[in-house]
Length: 58
Image (cartoon, rainbow, N blue to C red; front, top):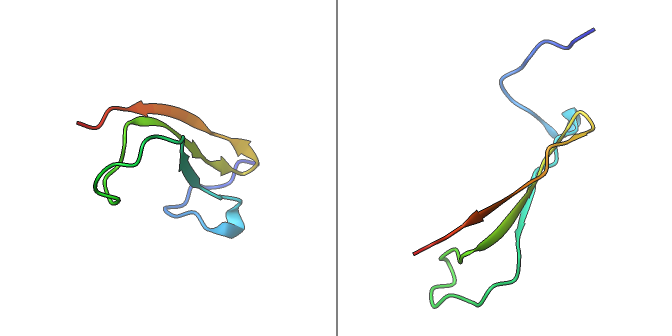
């Protein structure tokens, strides 16, 4: 049986999102994002939806 969709996900649903950037030189402003490849980890109901995206910050 397919579960009905819900508007929100909780830890009990098996969702555990996290993100961690690859090491890049430290920007002058520690609150600014640097250019690099960021990996977003997302698992929903046991399915790994992890992806990588390269961002260029100017």
